[in-house]
Length: 331
Ligand SMILES: [Zn+2]
Image: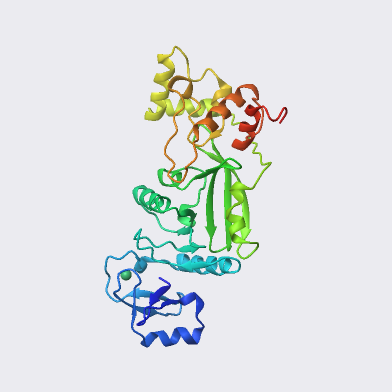
């Protein structure tokens, strides 16, 4: 952790002190802002200076397992935000019993998630912030970068806007950059397809960068069709993959064959939309705990658009919505 309270109850933020001032803290009586137990300064050769509890207690600041990556990213983001916004690091919020890594302008919680956590914990913390009218943005560290496939946990970090569809933030301590993955789509083999925008630390205003999902326009994504998709499905059925057996059964039940429509097989869809089963089961929207907007109309408009524009690239939800509103004659 990077903050502690001194004997007068003043917040000591290590990121705002000079080296000489930090050295003086070694002899001071300092306590944790949440549990009020003693903490001390750890100032080694390798890790940057930080505080640790004298005794390992259960406390909202679970700093004892905090990685160098996490401390370093909080520091970089703190200085970047501080150029143009009011920011505090690790501010304890008693009404929530939560400690956002950074709190910007008293309303935006920014969480830098470098380690694994349970889906339940992520949902609980996200809902906690939203219930008290904080906005929250999760920036994922290396272990949680999006990569080629979605996991149950990564799905819960996905967010959504009309301008860029599904998006996912990554933060990179080595390259010192923030990345916005957007227009995230998935093919029927579960491979992800998306666009990426890079932002070097310190370049531009960070709050404006974090608003990019609500500002960007004109993006489109083209995905090359896979030629071996039918073989992929045959293999899944051969090995009796439960998901594919269930889909096959559904097709049989409706007198159809799963391998009959090659174009359907190659359809790349917004994440969470099952293109092979919606015609039998209706559109089902899975849970995305960061997403507060309704997704179903996006899925429906996507499907309707694809029916008449087979070779079109993948667009943002706004493009489909505008098309069906009749405001735009031609896209
Ligand atoms: Zn504590």
